Length: 337
Image (cartoon, rainbow, N blue to C red; front, side):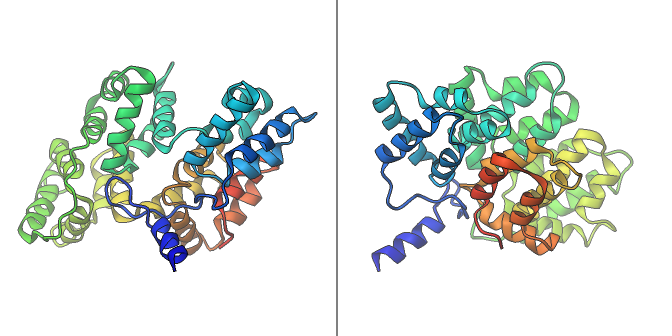
């Protein structure tokens, strides 16, 4: 019986915000970090490198277990495991494996840093991460960002974006969203729905400030009801209204937010589908979603993918990738359902 309750406890590991999680990567039950470290050391030393063993071990352990393997490796080999992996691997597989050696928040923080470093900003990545993370995740990302880069996330985002787009991202980064409440406030739902309508479709031009404050400060369950109520004021639903009212990065950001409020796992499933629509896969997006969500909600993303795109995520990845990169992603994806 203890086993079953432990297993159920694992399935709904509570994240900081009390969100249940749906991971595809769960703790290995017969975990032996020394044995794993020895396997990885041998795999790296093998002539031509034994990538398969590295994939088998690291994609089937959680981040906390991978860290223990890294400590055990260092004790054995008197070398840093991450540097050794960097030396042994290359290309897309290296990107996946090094991503797995970071915690989810460290990975998100470094992806944000990469998207605002150097010339030109990768707005798409920035939008995907900042608009889809929960309050608890954003708080953790901010803390880790500061530890890793000795800079405030707010300052970096502000320095790299401008206008209303910047204002929206900064409002999200502040992580001031209300926690879900057990009390449904129908009056406030109605007021917010009305305010969103008055600030957009009803007038000439858009009062973006009003949209930003409602969408960055209200709890997700509250906003779901607001968007439902909104339809009784507006001839268009919230997504259509956004498309009519704003353009460019601001439009993409608001749409991402609304899609994530309505069904976050479906948002990621659609991103994955888009990333694999063309002949080659957009590896960056594919890698980022699989690596960043495998210990959060990839199992549920997989279900949404199958339900909306008629084919399993597993099969789709298999068709659009190859080699060791494909093996690593399929292993993280887990089942073919």
